Image (cartoon, rainbow, N blue to C red):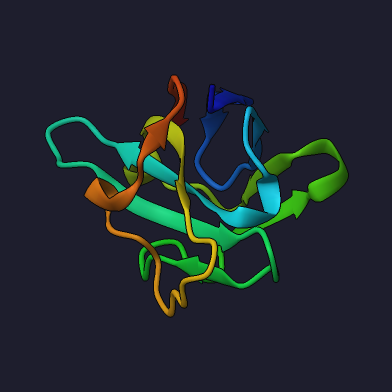
Length: 128
């Protein structure tokens, strides 16, 4: 069974930093793309960042480029999202999500609905 366990959310002041973690189990890590989706108050789900586990290719939404960094520890089947210079508009529930990309060429971040598995969310609150 594919499972994703997210952690690391919390309350931080504007300009601060947080690191989210997503630990995966039940599937071959290298065959998947793992990303972060957020749901901000009053907004639709937004794809924030994604990492192709096989080769480390990363993608970012324009809203977080230069501030967020996604990385992985394949030995631990864990993906991290380092969030720096946080803004109040980054507030929301962050979900890690995954989809199988084995044998397929992905040249972009999957759309929110293209992920096949989503873990429970972790709340990030940025105060001004």
